[in-house]
Length: 288
Length: 273
Image (tube, rainbow over all chains, first blue to last red; front, top):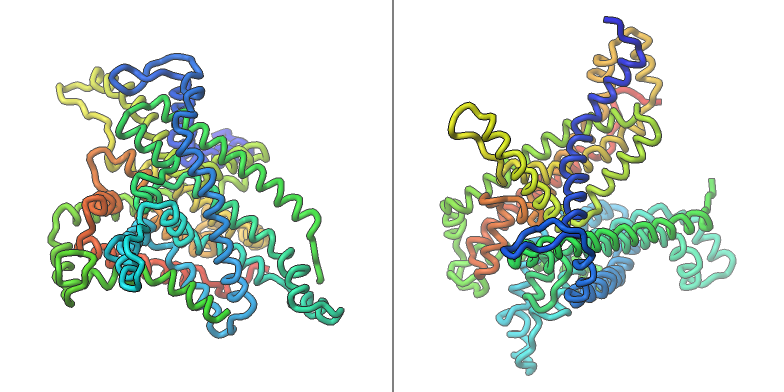
């Protein structure tokens, strides 16, 4: 048993990393290589894949431009509306809420996020469907209002589904806020509004950036909300992908769309991280 | 401000409350409340397709989260010992497993496994001694594999964050007192990181149990609960679906309470400083 300590150490490391490395290679790296290969292939006459090396699939991307535009517009707009509701909520939770109830109120925000998005989304079908709100609106003299299967319904579903995810990072950044900074600002004669815009808001921007980036990235691959609340009229890239893989079985074209989607996600993450670095560089405030 | 906050909480909970309320509806139409009844719970519980889907979901979530808890913890321990470049590569892959949209993970796994099965099945058939060789195909295995990916990434990240807060001195003290590395792990490290492992497991379990889109691509002929609910919603929601949804909501609620209970800060039995 002549085994040096270094060899032994390396062996243990390999054994520890091995299973997860195998999992990552087999179910992340290999699948990604597969769609890269498929995306430069051709569709076989009977559906499926035929080996080739062509960029025809990528050239054909404009054929699904509607899905792209819907996603690229509704994802950031949805994240923005989410932010509009989330910021005051997070502000209340971190600064205004009575300390006794704070943890309870925060938990109540988090709970919906851990319950099935599918169930929470289909509940809106009842509310927005013909027997729900439009029915009530008809009673007050607004007949024939259609809510379900509109971009508005999808936006509402997005705000509803992702609100907890937007509130949490903003809450965390506001909670860390040093109250002495606000007192100092007031002592120096700033009005509460001015203190908010010059002190609170800038210091919470990292949380805002995290929330917006997180929600936007997740929304880019969203499928359920547009499927259930957009009723096939408002569709995202995710819906196009399901159609291409499970219905029309155009795998090479679907792969090209998937590769493009991942590239966009990577691009946005890179930009968001650059921004975060810049914030971190200029906004360092340490009191202690 | 008060009114706004009340409205936000109402907005968050009204749809959930509606599903719960409609699950007690006596009528057969899901959206008109005609009277109180628990009949749909009985119907849901005696629906064999629904119960099979629930069982599949529980099994898949349990196995994938369980495997992830083991492999993820091992990876978190191993990463400490890895060189800088290896660690960066591994970190990148873990991040990718979480941020790549589920719909892409689903199709990529589908495409890769179709090719892999097409390659492996003839080889196995040629080598198998009898006439009825086993066939690789989509089913429980492929869902567990795909869910295991994000589950493992979640567990690794959570456990690593916990390991980072552990004092190294206590591990060194244990070694100085002639504990073997394994005993140091078992007696010193494991008790301290166990809450993190468990909360990683619960998180992974919830994600797997709620996942629709990945399972949708790789489930083969098997049905998970979200897939069953999705199919029913397309046909028109019945109070039966509301009943099962209510049960699932209750179960998730209990899981969250459990994980919050485990994650809360408590003085560790051994001081780390």
